[in-house]
Length: 357
Ligand code: SP5
Ligand code: ZN
Image 1 (cartoon, rainbow, N blue to C red):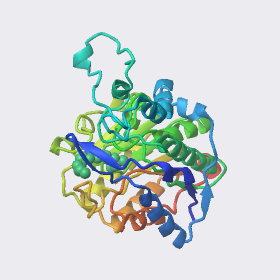
Image 2: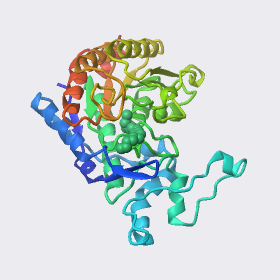
Image 3: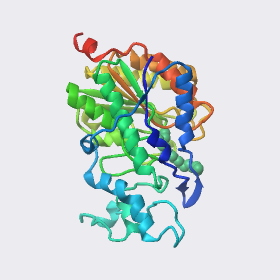
């Protein structure tokens, strides 16, 4: 049974809201998501392992120090600034952005005003920071790294119940309900320990723009993503098109809204076959389950049987495998969807076996 790595700190993140087109709506990325997944996996017999604290170096390997320092201090600074009382904003949120069209060739200075600084690091208005956000994001990254360590220690596969998710975060900017790129951090740890290449394949309904950007044009970590087509109007809007190939080291398979098991599984198969061509030493799966039919955040229509089959396809690569949780917002379904995906992954193989092939 694939071990489930759990960080108690993830519950400390309560974004309360997401701000979309200027309107404050209830958050969908909530702590009970992780509770639902954990209880389903425990019921199915998966052992639960506590995340171990990990060194900052592992985060600095994929993120700029400036982003990490901002995230670590953002809430305290916001609190001290008086913005909670006046104008009455209880979460860290951007309002002004160093757009390339604004700056031209000039390098952005870090704004002196607390209320302006957020825009130097956030690329959307939907990813709010509150009192426990940094501790939770750090806990999620610790979980991903602990899962990587379990795999390096001989587990064929390990699952990190990461919350908040991570796959939209680049080296220098956060958004999409994500703060630290847990999957990229795990992939880089595996690459450092085993040598490259490592494959990172993203099943979340939204494009894995973070890993694409972090590992752009390096074949040491090859990245692939299947997602709903941004050309049909979906987040992250500016990225995720088929032509973004990173000099051959990235592959995107955008699908039309409404796509169900057949085209989605064909895309998963295409990504797996493409990744196999690099002869990777390990696999990271960014397992969002928001591609499911019934998920409120995506128009894809994948079934639980589809997720199990995707697990079989990815497990069939026969690689040491770290699975990290990304999106998935149908609280009644997410646990079963994650369990189905892990159920499929029986063919993952431990580091030594995969090496002595
Ligand atoms: C990890 C992950 O799945 N992030 C997805 C973030 C995409 N969210 C896009 C939301 C688009 C606006 N939704 C409007 C609904 C208002 N509640
Ligand atoms: Zn998503």
